[in-house]
Amino acid sequence: MYRKLTGVLALLGFLSLSGGYRVISNVMDGVPEFVNINPAPFVKIGNGYYYIENKLRKNWFDAYESCSRMGAALISFETIEEWNLINKYLKDEKIDYFYWTSGTDLAKQGKHVWLSTGNPIALDIWHPSQPDNIEGVEHCDEM
Ligand SMILES: [Ca+2]
Image (cartoon, rainbow, N blue to C red; front, top):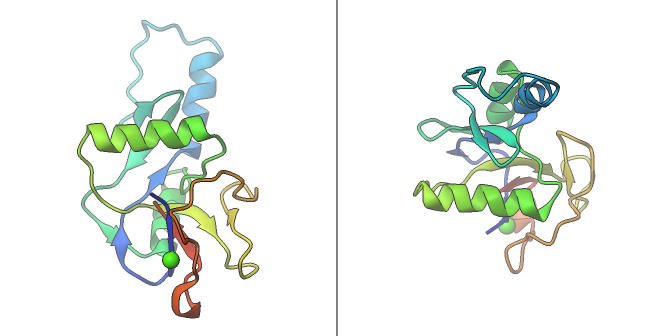
């Protein structure tokens, strides 16, 4: 499910991953499997590390700031595999909240990009009839 909602609604939490990328590259660049690195509070899902907030509700901007403070970023989905992995994880863990992504059309109405990467949202992951820019003020994308 993927919908587009306003950036000022107080919705729940966020996922992030760029901080995880740093961890990954370190791991892949030669830290052996047996070296015990604790990535908490990030969890490893697939090849990435993600922070999943499930207590605090934040608006999109605050979520973005919170990710930045952790050296991370709101999630951007560049592959359908990552999208499926994250959705499966949330389902398996019975995490039933809406999460902000870095997707937004704040810069140009109707043109949704992953703000964390600057890339257009190219995946067909929108919920039917979304994005609909409801009431003309929806600019931030949630999952
Ligand atoms: Ca919408």
